[in-house]
Amino acid sequence: MRTGAAAGHRGYFHEAVCYGSDDDLLAVVVPFLTGGVAAGEPTLVAFGERNTALVRAALGPDSGVSYLGGGDVYARPTAAIRSYRQLLADHVAAGAGQIRIIGELPPSAFGATWDWWARYESAINHAYDDFPLWSMCAYDTRTTPTPMLADVLRTHPRTAMPDGRHVPNEGYTPPEVYLLENRPIAPDPLQAGAPAVELHDPTPARAREAVHEAGRGRLKVDDVDDLAVAVSEVVTNALRHGRPPVRFRLWTGPDRIVVSVDDCGAGPSDPYAGLLPAGGAAPGGLGLWITHQSCNYVAMHRGTDAFTLRLTAGNPHVTP
Image 1: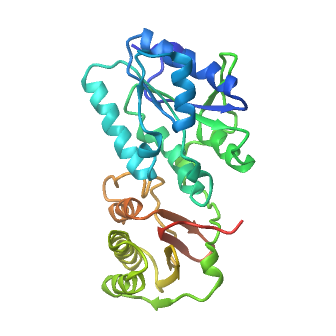
Image 2 (image 1 turned 90 degrees about the horizontal axis):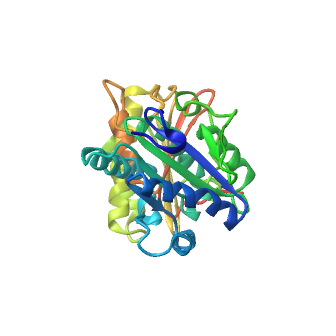
Image 3 (image 1 turned 180 degrees about the vertical axis):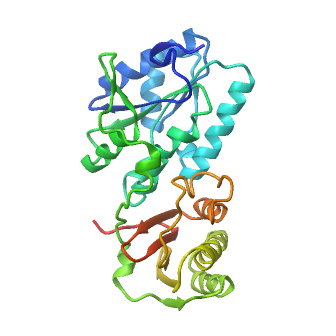
């Protein structure tokens, strides 16, 4: 049975918490968590170190709340979805009628990789809708840039307020619309220079070879191997499902390798491509899903005459 604001709701009840002070955060979090414990529901916190300490101090010991390592949960969007879906399935199998989770993205999400975390926040409206989940995603308005807060309101159906209200977000955009929007991707500074490697209509094997040659002695072997796997999948997809010509470009920096692959096709039609395993016969879906798990950052862009995938191994950067 569902309780609280989610009573009577089927599937995922997804809320944002946009707070401007610690008191505002606790005004939402404490009743949310204590209400879940009182109802006998699995009640979890996935905050970073600072806000975890804040909540622990407010609730006291033996509160009945479980704490997850926020940084561990939110390593990459695809990994977070996979991990949470397993967690939710386990709780439902154990008899949970509702699960409550409040979490926050790590600070690194609010920089170069924000666009794929915004896609995550949108996609989970679908990915978690199989479960009786009520979750809140906390965003500090003192540190979250205004354009990112606009994305938060577009990807969360409602906002939980410090005064106890649960307000529908008028700008909420369903994921099947939001995820197919042509969102620009900020360039990596390395792309201001000429690529170290440029290939036209390469075989997947030649693309992998280029990554291994560029990464030798530059990054960890595992990171280079993961990027090579991802590049192979992306090039294969472009050759099979895109339109020629296919162009492969690679840039190197002291702490990263950036690869861009583009073709003249329209890109995947599945809005969840990369974030969820492909369903049915979606072309290239499995390859994109593998890619999102193999790279430190994946960006996609549909231009007027090309579809581009940019992959990063190492530390992602973008220009301001």
